Length: 290
Image (cartoon, rainbow, N blue to C red; front, side, top):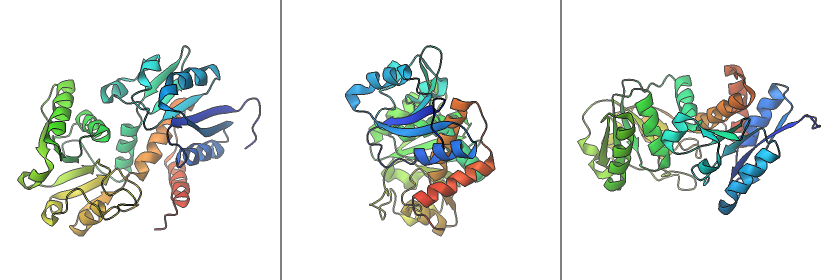
């Protein structure tokens, strides 16, 4: 692309940012659309978040993504926040407005859009959600938003599982989230589930780790999502498949959270064809050969 006085700048603020795939997504989108926009990573230290947000606005940075560890810490410095992002308590996209940035969470809409491309459903489903950290809490919100029948929240720490269940049930004024100790997975009702793996267990280089190792657990899983995308197929996914279930990883979630951010910044709709092209570029960057 040709950079000139009309080039708009977008970027990613986080720490670390060296290994991000976001420039692959956004720069290829801009190139594909012939849009005069460039996307770059910005390393921001924890104690410089306010300066980064205010400085970006002063520099007319068109839009920003926010990654770990700043997704919650950035919120006090925004002029406005989307309702879903407010409920989740985390922001990953900043859109420039007249008086400052508005914060959105595109991670969960990105997960939903990724699932839809694989014909996975949440509405009316019984869900097993593994984990009780920030990602699991956000997924629990999405399950509630999308009308899941019930959500069994399994975590090593029962105290954390109970805290997330109480908070999310309270926000939605329903009691669909049922906290359970991970060790009690054998007590799950005997039926077929959508399982979402929202812990870091199995993340590279610990590719042989799995949050639940008992084979009989996987007989209950019809469809599964592992939010991890490196490795491309986790041990959790391979065990689901070995027991006749379908499983997808988190790479399409990463793709679509980026696409939704791009759509918000530029008031456009990205086609399925373009999304497939960008996914191919991401796989090339990760050296994934299927």
